Amino acid sequence: MSEPKQRRLTGLKPTGKLHFGNYFGALKPFIDTYLQYDSVLFLADYHALTTARDATKLRQDSIDVVKDYLAAGLDPEQAIVFRQSDNPDHTELAWICNCMVTVPFLQQGHAYKDQVAKGKEANVGVFTYPMLMAADILLYNANTVPVGEDQRQHVEYAREVARKFNQAFGDTLTEPQEDIIEDVGVVPGTDGQKMSKSYNNTIPLFGTPAEIEKAVMGIVTDSSGDKPQHVYAIHRLIKSAAELDPIYEQHKGRYGDLKKVLAADLDAYISPMREKRDSITDEQVKVILEAGAIKAKAISNPTMSKVRTAIGINL
Image (cartoon, rainbow, N blue to C red; front, side, top):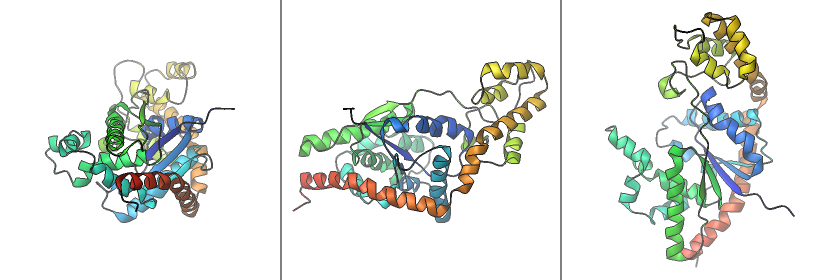
């Protein structure tokens, strides 16, 4: 008899159109491994409210990110896919988590400290963000949470909250473990820095052939040497050195030609996914999210019942 799969939870913040950096840094690693686990995938739309101020955009972004994952190969029958806001258990447990920790504890949160360091006025959502994330994790008795090194603290916070709760009220919540995602390498943007919307240096993942080519032709190239390093680094994400080296030797010094080859290869790589994505309707996504919310509540409701009993809410 095979061992039951460990439960793994992943949150997606709906923040607009994906780029190739998002794909190779987060989307592809998830698609490559999610079938190995009892996977729970949720849209962190309440988390998005720390910055989102456009209701129409948030609605569409929430639908679009699901389309992105479906197009990349996610089978909604093999994972629970739902919106955080469709399950009130998240915000209820977040309040209880708030009551388990101190203000100095939350003041050590990376996002909050970063806002303060930059002289910005952080809203309360940014301050208590780690407790909503703790609730996201603890509700589903998640064994592991895949995160980058920079997100390790969030899982540590969730583990600390579970420990404090269990010490106060008895063994109730599962202490999660972080699964640190190995560095896949920095995907360079068109300016050579890490590809990021904040740097305005991205190549759109599901862009049209013309949009992809326009972005690629804007890649900054080093005029010294025969091989444009930024162009080659992006190219290596989709093709081997054995495939590329003869091409780069043949077009030595002809950067414009090499960029056109890269643009064509990126378009060929993403074309099947783009076609699949274009065939997915908003209504299909809504049906998937509604079904996912029912499955999510089937796990989280018993957790919340135990929590309410433990703290004295259930009479």
